[in-house]
Image 1 (cartoon, one colour):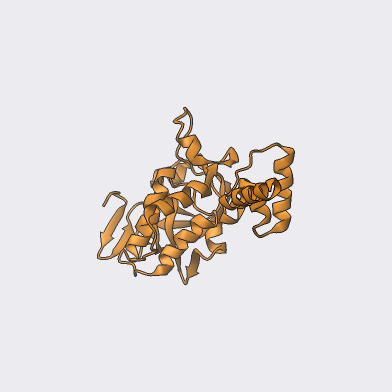
Image 2 (cartoon, rainbow, N blue to C red):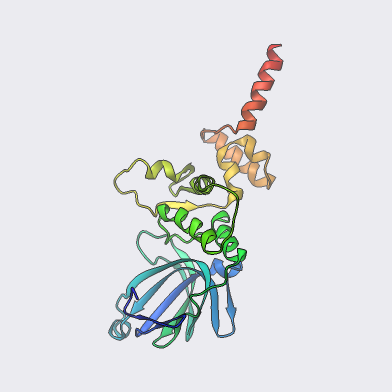
Length: 258
């Protein structure tokens, strides 16, 4: 095993350390990505966890921080649960609200490493990304790897080349300091201080208002579209014409000229 505090026994991964805290975002439970299954937790295997020695736990010291990045459903044991509101696990990660599950030596970290191949697993990961709930523990460059790994492990064929997935990621991950700008533009500048975690994953429904007034009012949620469009006009923000908008403007120009 990669970690000394984990031990494989057949298809199970058992925790052999002193104490562990698993941080599962509360949104996972709200969106149906995680759920209670008796005395176990069933969740997408993308979360942070902190491992403490007994001395660190007793003295309130910081433990070692790790991340699990498995785009499949897993189940784990726990002996206690608590909450952490607006917790920042690492300095480079954004604040979030978590259910914190506590494990002790002998608890099962992963019940079955031989997961069933189902479209539901891939759907859950895609929903995380498209709904803007992707945990900030994933570096920007690793998102496409997890996307492809999710559909490959589950033998799901979406009948699309990888470039389509890359385009989706490139649009749904925005510069966290300016959501009107795709993060790909910032990370591509290779500026000092920019890290792989300086993006914000937004919900697909928020994308049209960020592009232009036209795409905003032709999409759903008219109230929010009007508000964002007025704000964009008042602030003089740049508008990005969609292909259909360019066609309409071209047609109108021809009709006017004729």
